[in-house]
Length: 175
Picture 1 (cartoon, one colour):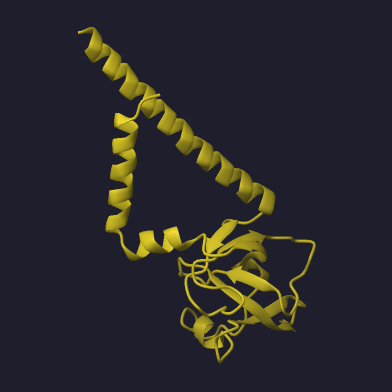
Picture 2 (picture 1 turned 90 degrees about the vertical axis):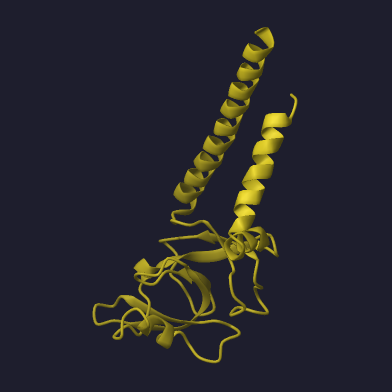
């Protein structure tokens, strides 16, 4: 009976440790969102549209600086209405609306055309991005560090294998 209680306490202890690790990761993510003032402070490059500057799998760090306007040449990440996946492209042109608001035209470095047609997939009248659609400016990156995310999205079964392996290690590991 004593070994069964001890084993149950060990499983409970492991569960609490895993919960603490998960909570710490979420707290760190929330802190990054507040500090960088962006909904997504870290993104992964998913396509080759920014090659050779950024390659598929590169991990990008974003910062949304309200006091520093975007300039031609800045690499920004933006989100189109109704589209869940953000896009990483360079500011190609800047125009100003009737109210003086800056309007941005972006383009992938490896793309032959600017993003106007990409914008118009979500809204036929859309020709430019506004400040509200830009998530942030790229301020740093780690090459290839995001390939794990790409693999988990391309091969969903890999998630189950990974979680199963971690769970098995947590249950069978010793302190």
